[in-house]
Length: 336
Ligand code: CP
Image (cartoon, rainbow, N blue to C red; front, side, top):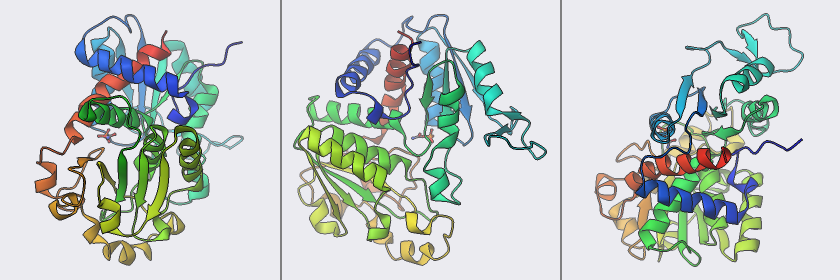
């Protein structure tokens, strides 16, 4: 029996396969309509809100002749149980073992968005909702953001390739900067940015307020492995000026410090001390005429100033548009 190919993390895909996805995405950007998904369907299972992901997946399937069905367990679909052997006498109505298998009888792919519960990182880091779908599903599963965001990675990489006019991003100085946000957010996009930037061979600086904001060792290890393979570099910095100096790319994201996961009250005064990590014109002036991006949604004048967001160096809207094109490439590839 051939193993089902899922799109759970870019790290599971070879570099040539990722390059092929990006080339397909560039083609889908030029040729909007097609029939690569004619007669095909995808269930989009959202446990959390979305604007870009939902719109771009639904539209992408439609533009390639396919059909997307959105399901929100606990809202318009039954709440799902993920524990094995549990006596289901609580709030959940059906088990993932049935949900994934039944959906697999209807549709050709399943997309899953399931953020962490923010209580216990040792539990959330197992990504068990996504893994359970992949385990039980007879059809390919796509990660629409759990503890990583691989579709965002591809959209980001494509936007950078477009900006620099080359698919070869090696040697670019890339800064992934933590920014303030009033709430402790998911590390998914930060994990993903670190992963794809090192995969592309860039010289990556992870800029964050204190060592507590360094990412989970799994993603730091992936980044180190990518550096060894791609020839880039990786460093962690807590110094804003030296991190921004000469940067070609500044990518911003906020996330909660993992040592405080589930016990966020003591983290709040720490994060409040680092509001000055906001991306502003003064910091961008230190760069090598660097490009700025963010996955969106973004709180203006908290994570980045109006001036940065509205500057010609901001490619966040291009990156968001690219979600549509890269996801078409992922769906079409999984259906080949
Ligand atoms: N960047 C991103 O995934 O956006 P949404 O949360 O709106 O889908």
